[in-house]
Figure (cartoon, rainbow, N blue to C red):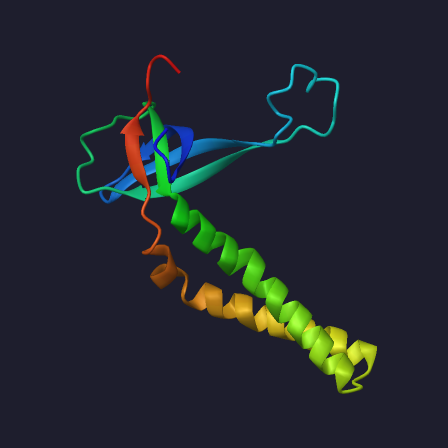
Length: 143
């Protein structure tokens, strides 16, 4: 794996006119453990990723691929979904408490601010999504 690249193994589950739909299995840290069958903490889930590609003849349905994303794009996603909302939450909470606003009003205001932030993200999701470019590479046979 290249430095600065986040990679996940996947399978082509659909070939479209604009690119591919790739199914990746997202595993928790303990999913690879030999005792996962005895433990209820292991978690695995399928995720579908849309990968735009002008050349849809490179891969066929069922091909094993590696889905790559630049690490800095992964960090941008972390900021958008975790860090900024946490900053909004803490800032609103401390500011409104300092003003002496009741706890109920503070809690509702914080939830409203977070809802507004995620509404804005939802409105601009296509524009934001264009910044995240996934690249498909054939999966190495020796891995």
